[in-house]
Each structure stands twice: as structure tokens, then as C-alpha cells.
Length: 125
Image (cartoon, rainbow, N blue to C red; front, side, top):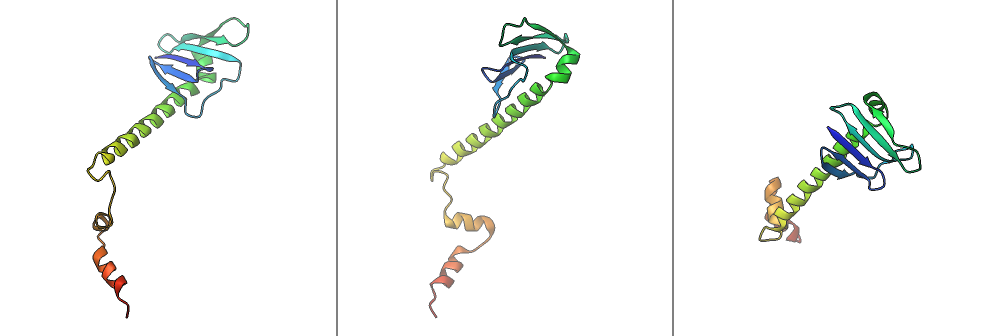
């Protein structure tokens, strides 16, 4: 797995698939970007200041940066939920009635008889 995280862009890429982390993320040591290959167990860190790139080993990645994978998965799951929600809204709005549920439809879905309720409510004894 190839992992890239770019702090300034709030972007995490894994195997070429990118997500913008929901709510953002921060790397606390002045990192501008991180590149890591889990198959090779090696990568490097680029800093915001004039420090040279730092070699990143599997142990260092696991201890300090593994959370990027979890953040990526969380952001992907959130994006999927949003896509499903949007798809449901589009399907509902494609209905002839624009996705609106009228009182009779709502009543029939929960087993209530809305006409009986209306008749009872209209009596003035």
C-alpha cells in the first residue's frame, strides 16, 4: 500500500485514491507531507521548515503515523454515507410527486386509518 498525506492540502492518498479528511487532520511535528510504502516498509517525511527529509521505517510509521490509514478509512466511510444519502434523495425527487409523502400514504405505511381519524375529529357532539 502506498500512502501519501499532505498536511497543507488536507489530503490522504492510499494507492492513488484520495480523500480529504472529514474535519481535517494535523501532523504535530511540522510535517508538510509523508510518503510511505507498506510493502517495502520504507518512506520519508518532508517538513515545512528547512529540515531535510527524514527516512521513515515501518516501526516509525506504525508508532507515529498509522492513524493516517484509520483517518483515510473514516473519511471514505463518511463519503460513502453521503453518496448513499444523496442517491436516496435523488431517487425520491425523481418520483412524480417529488418524493413527498401525503397523509394517506403515511397512514397506510403505519397501519392507521386517517379517514376514520378525520371523521371522528369532525364530529361536534
